[in-house]
Amino acid sequence: PLESMTSPVMPPTMLLHGGHEIEVAALVAPRVVMREMSHIFPGKNFKLDDHLIVCPTCQRSKMDLVIWGDDVAVEKDRLLEVFAAFAKQVCDELAAAGHWADFVDPCSGLPSLSKDCTSVYDEVASIQALLKYEVSQAGPCKVLLHPRWGSAVYPATCFTTAPPDVLTGVLAKYTK
Image (cartoon, rainbow, N blue to C red; front, side, top):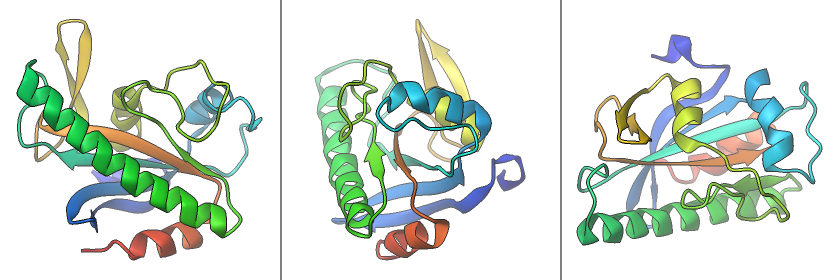
């Protein structure tokens, strides 16, 4: 529910990039997330009161991603490629407008554009905290449960210091 989200700039909205649907939200980073950012992006020196927007994304998978197997691995690779292409294009557009932006590689949990980072960003815990999506336990792993897609979901996150109107202007280009 939107009421439980942290300072939404844009509620979860279905966007289209390269023929692929990606649900994207944009929220002002709460203090608990800001504490983590200095470890995830050590070169940025974020302060607790800095302006940072977190953009959690979710893609609907063709299958439940909790199970293991070759088909699931191929599907995860496909979803990673879709996310990385989308995130890189959005980050490039924001950088061209003079704003810092980066995205986390969901496979490693490390930033894709910033270097020298060894702290891992937890996509599932972040989306659970920011969007209040439920999680379940599958062995040692926490699994995100999307409100409509269940565990057939691929979460990934972008970050930017761009003002909300600049970010929403870039994202509006991908509106379905």
